[in-house]
Length: 552
Image (cartoon, rainbow, N blue to C red; front, side, top):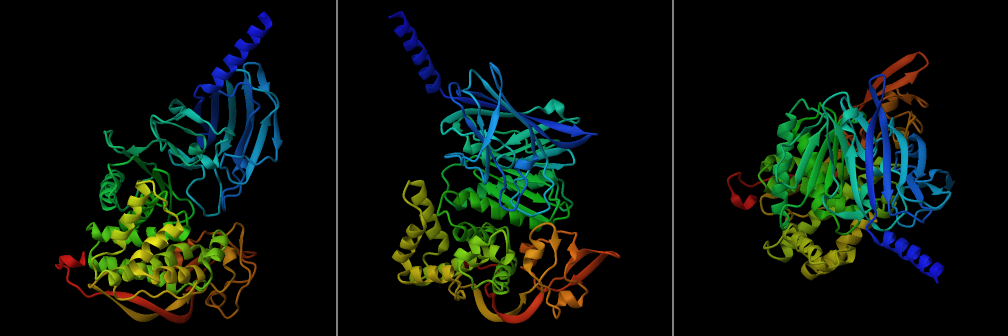
């Protein structure tokens, strides 16, 4: 009987431990080599894994970022009994949403607290991609969890804390991350969280749920001023999208070692990576784009919807909120139209474009600019059907209200909502966008103060296989000997040493591209204009008055 009672006590104790909310405490310690910040030491302390032999996983690659797992060393797991061997295995995590996973299983069950520790070197990637990789600035470090965290495969909610060892920095330092405060959450939330520490410029402490910090300093605008503008704009967008109350949000800035600028939104946060030479206008435009994503988060999970609306509203919201003049807004809209019409891949299906997102920059722009063209057309349809009493602005807010009410907000729900307003055009316009048909807005789009007219633009043509510039090493292949690039001196097999922002370049096919190539006789600088034959395009003209309130 005593043995049975003892076994029951052990069993109940074990069940009680598993029933308690498990916890995870993460400490990030910067590592230096000859005063240079080279990476971080990660220490993860788990409680609640007792009695299990957990699997731990990390991303091997993330899109074009190919060396995530390769930068991890000194991986060790210990518990109250000492070191636990880790066995690498091919098992794909059931719940942990890492990309192309590398996994290790504990070689025995955990006894007591489990401590996983490892070192992560900073990224030396030369391929452009999402602003997630672990990067250093002059006096700091930042990255998203998906590019450096190894986490346990466990579907429970964890009481989680993350802190930097700030004393390890040789300069005064602070920290920031985009984790929700005061919540227990799944470990997947850590993968889509930004972490930053170092000599930060931050907004003053306040009761606001909005936070912002920067490791970068810009020539065109003071860092503090940019952070304040970000805060004010977030509040305005919250009102624009009828959001109930100001929701928690974090904006971060860091340097971009490859191209002029890029940005990526994650839940309740965004990171902008930009060179210090960016203009104030460029910085504010990319901020608007990424902030728009935040208010659309959770809606139809399709790139054409998310990115198309972000392109459309990065300018329209700024215009309606008084941040752009009608003339500036017209110029921004025309840039979107130019990028769409000059793209030689505008006739590919959206499915094919999505599949080629990381391998062909022309395909990558289809969800963005073709998506925006679809919303220009949709705006016109809604205005025509309602006699101007509604627009895309009002219908999108209806869709957002559906989301907040817990109603379905998938692709078909969007089409059904439009069908109730525009009839057969809802499905016709959607199919045209998906199938690569040529998209042309009508004059009803944007209201009575804007007029659309036909024009022409050169197609964006590099004159060689675009894949030559998409992945390092960048080696020219498929060169057309009659192209402007070849005429300017580019040769088959040239190794390109600099990085080109192909997304930005496609919006200005009349602007020169400059490549620095490696030759046996030394480096050579070659410039050419990537302009192909003329194609039909369209442009907006502002025909209203700056004083006419109906134009806003």
